[in-house]
Every structure is written in structure tokens, then in C-alpha cells.
Image (cartoon, rainbow, N blue to C red; front, side, top):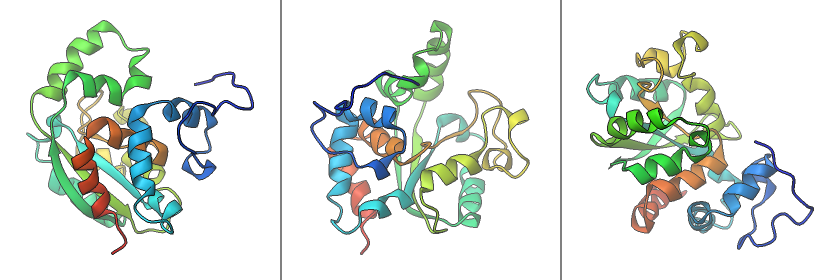
Length: 209
């Protein structure tokens, strides 16, 4: 993703987005203009003044409806624990066509109409399971680390030790799980997936005490 911006590209964004949120200034610019990110990030910063960059320890994994019939949740929990991800909260949630499009907005901008017709019934057929995680390994960004461990959607491009391999994820769209690529996505996606009350429950589970 590339965009030409002036030195004052953050003008008009109603909150300050520190550099530690992401090294990618394009994401800071794009997401900074979205109400999803603005609301969720502002709420995250209110967790604690001194917590700041410690927020990046937190991430999530979402078990999609295609992962439920094959009972991959227990295997996933074992994988996460083995990699020092501590479960802080589990919430059921239901996709609808708008959250599908907004969550993957920057992938759907090159999707085909056939993909919409395939993904909508697949993701809206039943509940998904949101798992809030704290990375206890000491890594700088839990989302980056989890995304690396997760493995690609294509089995040919992932290792035998990747999480998707260990939970027997299928090729392509039947890959069972989703997680954000880095912290800035974590913040944005909380705003896409949840309203204020549920975000408050999630953020409460992140508090140091």
C-alpha cells in the first residue's frame, strides 16, 4: 500500500497517533481517518497512563465458523499456551456482511464479486469466538509474533510447526482463524468488531490489576 502524503498528513485526524503504534506511516494515516480506529485507540490509551507501549503485548485470535465443526479450539488453546500466549477473555461474536467487508477492507479492495458471494455465507453461518491474548514472551508486538506463528492460508507456504498446520486448517478460505498483523490492526479491528460496551469489557480484561 503506497500513498503520497505531505509533511502534515496527520492534519484532520482528531487524535495523536504515536510512532510506536506502527512503523508504517501509511497505516497510521489510513486508519487514523477511520472512526473504528479512532474510538478504539482512544479507549485503549485510557487503560492507564503508564501502560502505553505495554498495550502491544495484547492481541487476539478469532476462531471463524468453519473452525467450529472440526473442534479446533482445544488444539488452538494448546498451541497458544505453548507459545506463551495467556488467555485473558473469550467472547462469542457473529459476523454480518458489513463487519466482513470492514474487517478486510484493505484486502477486499482487490477481491472479486464471486469472493463476496462465497465469504458472506461462510462467515455469517454461525458464531465466531474471539480470544483476547496477552503475549508473555517479552516480544515487542504480540500481534506481529502471533501472525508469524500462525502461518499462511496456503498450506504449501506454511511450516509443519505453524499454528494453522497444528489445528489442521484447510486451504484458502477454510483456514479456521484470523489474527491482526500488528498492534495498529488490533486497535482498528476492535473498533470494527465490537461496540462500546463490549470494547469496555475487553479493555477491562487488559488492565494490569
